[in-house]
Image (cartoon, rainbow, N blue to C red; front, side):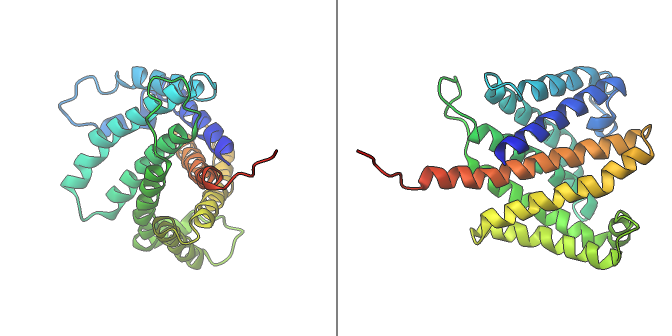
Length: 257
């Protein structure tokens, strides 16, 4: 699961970086940057290059830890520049919290991948704590779950037309996000909660964004949503896999003579 998560996470951010360069920053929402930052659109190109490079480097074992650290640092910077000011300015608007939580999931995914990669022989070998990534991931799930209740019509409209009970499914998935958060934080069936979350977001990507992208391949917003959903999926699988990694470390080993 950790390998699948790292692969999806890396490819998603490599794609975001490439699209960021090609379309001058749509993927990092440059228009949301503070007004005092000059050349905001121009900055999309070096930012995209960093995302593309770190995503590709995350696929290479020798550079994976450095790439995970760089990518996580970039995502933290994005959080501080884009999302924190918006939450401070509009603390009662739920969608602002939801948007920030998606970025927190990216950070949790990057940090968890960093924490579960082999540490031997690397200058920042002490960096990484899988439990911190798990907790951050769980905290990010609450606002996303609540958004299904706050914005029921918008959420239900994303359910494929061939599926019945759009509104009940929107309520159910919203409750599932919150239940998963509680399970991961409390330690009660936490590995199962994380795995089911990864399965759920994988289905979101496959059933919602892939068909939309096939139907409108020239839609920049749909490419953006597809990349974001795939990155969240990768982060979810990385977090789910980290529970197995921690369990394997704690499991007693048998001595053979």
